[in-house]
Image 1: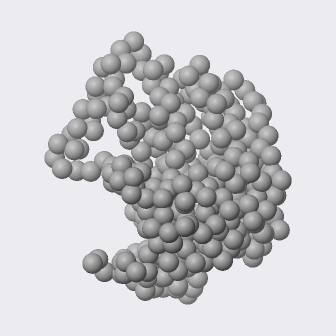
Image 2: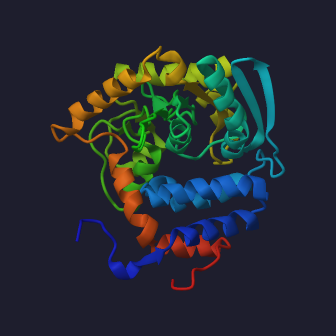
Length: 350
């Protein structure tokens, strides 16, 4: 048995449909409308399906805290605008980002395929979710896509000791004919905040270079880093990328930076509230007259990885997905009990 893996007796087996039902029941009890609850439950289910526990059911108690915060709009209804031929803007109305993405997706796809490139700007959204489901959705529609968001100011810039930047994730998707899309999604911090929290729960220490304590000293203790400051990956390079995301997914689209989001939260400890930028590209339009040649070039690049034994990003997720579609997933009983205490619908076999 792997180190820190809970004993089998301490795990609860759930089908994917039970994960979805459990999530929906909690969100409904917390007061979320069906239009808000359904996409949130779907994304949590997708993360459990793909073995990404840090963005799955583990996020549900935090979702409830966000829903109960003073700034969250339980009746939020995304409003779509078209400022130009290439731009879609969706005001999430201080609800979750996911319903806003759903609402803007058809127009984003239509504009990208008509013009070659289009932008979706989501404003005034609470955001807790991974970005890869969004870029994968676009890639499965034949579009390459970039997605990015700020978060809360938890991360110190390279050479600094005080939080200024967010974890600022960046995701990219590339369509592949008859294959799963090429997708990556990573934080520009040295480690995702959820992974730091999970390490603390398991009693683990962090790798060197992930964070600082409240006095600005390097630390490998999760609780000290969460109370102090995280660091960017790759030193000054990660800081530059994180700053780019702050600007592109903040002031560029008329929304908050991570520092603004933290100030807006005012101690509520809700999910970050800010904007999201998604850029979609149509390879069929931008690639010229020979899409077959372009596709072959991309596939040759991917083969150069796999032929030497290197793993492509998301490959592990796809392998896990193929298994859990039939077997379902297992979650720690302590998490399951916590969720059912929030009003989750208990599974029959649990």
